[in-house]
Length: 128
Image (cartoon, rainbow, N blue to C red; front, top):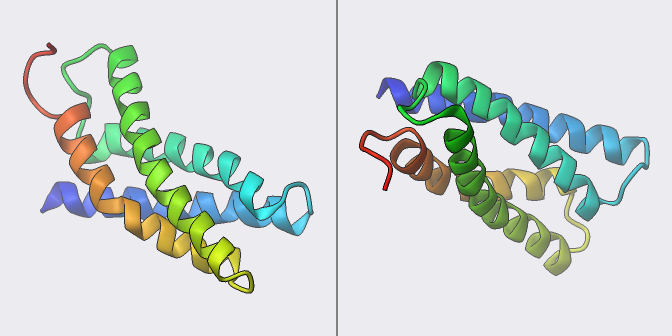
């Protein structure tokens, strides 16, 4: 239960970073809602990696580079889920706020990310 609580905390911080970067990019009209998600999600992934590695799961038995690549792989897959839901909603419902679409996108990827990080990235067992 402790890991899940810390994971949700890391997710909340990552969500705040994600929505903050998205807001800055949209408010200053630097990027459109679709392009702005890339740096927003990237910033959130970096933030959650640091929190999850330090507090949620602890460092794995793997070298930090291997751990980082695995985290990035799971992060990329969960990002594809997140971005697909986000983009799909904006395309299907053109009047929808990008921030509301972000909530649905982020929520849809949370379970996948937790399972991937807890089992594939930080889980016990030797590398194959």
